[in-house]
Length: 303
Image (tube, rainbow, N blue to C red; front, side, top):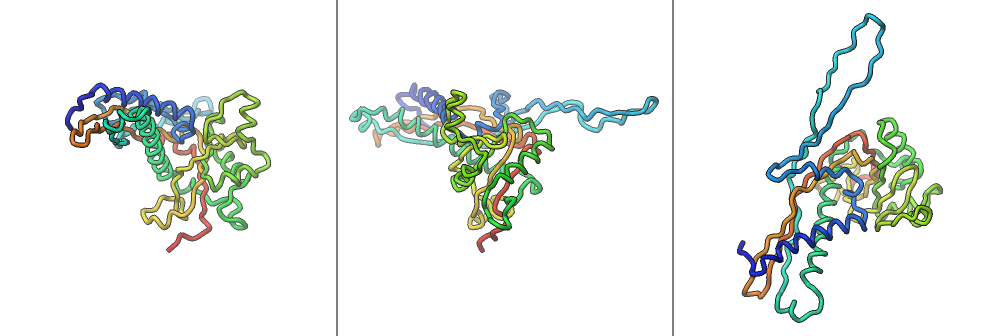
């Protein structure tokens, strides 16, 4: 790709885009906000991230004179996260139009590009997350026999019980919901809305944070992927006809981004400059037991 005459803007766009991404992550709720970000372990020139992951087996009680059981697990190790994807948002800035408007087209497009990249990344992470959840951890709604595809307090209690049994920390628990389930959650009697939480704690409320129930931060995701009756994302698009509700703890899943840059090229015949801001990223399970999902498994998939 040829070098643009205003090469300095390549760095500017990367800076503006990444700063805009950081601002969006603070001001708006994405799934990535609530999952474990291991980007600090990513190194340039290495296509995977090695996260220190040291485990110790359970303690043992034996009679005096008896031997302890031999340990079966690894003494030390790491979880590996492959950085296999890139997310970008190419765009053009027409110079002839840029000179005739008071709006900074480059900045506005950079900000919008950052938002588009984040959304694409979040959808990819969510899709991977759903795909990595074990079948035994994907369940129908508790009261599906009387009211299919409807979330109730019983689902929150079941999720809390499941995570407690897995010794998932009480902090960092989340519930990802789609717009269709939001109204059902709000109707649950013990639900505490985000505005009440903000008033009592003086906490700034990010867009998408709905409230809290049974220890879960409830997050509305307009870009939640649909699933089929078995809770998987089917290659047959028609079968993806309902939205899941995902309960988890932040260590259930991890993601990382490695590099952010902007390629720039001159388009002289179009009197425009082309920019391609992008970053490389990856995602994978971390503590696979720390997630519990419900979805509509009562209604049959469309044929």
